[in-house]
Image (cartoon, rainbow, N blue to C red; front, side, top):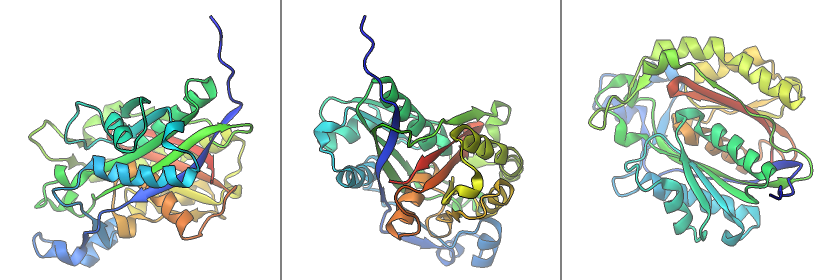
Length: 318
């Protein structure tokens, strides 16, 4: 048996994102459920969210975001040999999303599999992609987070209808002489599995908001600090902190405890809502597009959600 030559590190070449065109404001929701703009903003920080039409699937959104990331990478479709899709809202479980996304992007015969770690899914997939590249199992990996939460939401339930949204984000990962993706710190709190749940295929998403809020604001800042420690990075040196866009109050609480005083904090949730596994790549891709961060700077990613699963790593911004 011959051990393949392994890469010293892995890095992100590019990001891409996609959001549906349809904007749903808080005032729009107030027409059908008992709520208002002030109530929603004061509790979760959201002003509006994007909702895909019935004829636009999570696969469609993944193809848009993945195509944009691939175009920005400078690689051809033929250069990609592994596709990983993170999602917890697939309408159909078989066949997997990754093979369908790869086919539509013209990526021929790649390894292809899905990851379901809910809102932590992109960080799980990114960690797996980095490990595959460094082990010599893949050369270039397309990682996509895509969600159509609107098809799993009861739009008469104020607790969930005001929070969740649709979208996709993607990144291309390749080998690097120096590490551009830090060690992933991941774990789960399975004793709280029922805090965010879809009971069966005929049910809608249900969430115990206070349970999730308490857990996220007390248990996750040590995870964020450990990800920095493992990467050998002082939080004060971070250019960006990009947590899962769950709730603006959660984001700001973790950021305060982390001590990343010089970092730009992603607050994509205000205009995008909670897009689960898509939220981190979508938010960072938009930050890059707006020029809020620069190539070569460091960002801390922190995903957390149903499971309850969590994961985080420091990455170099492409």
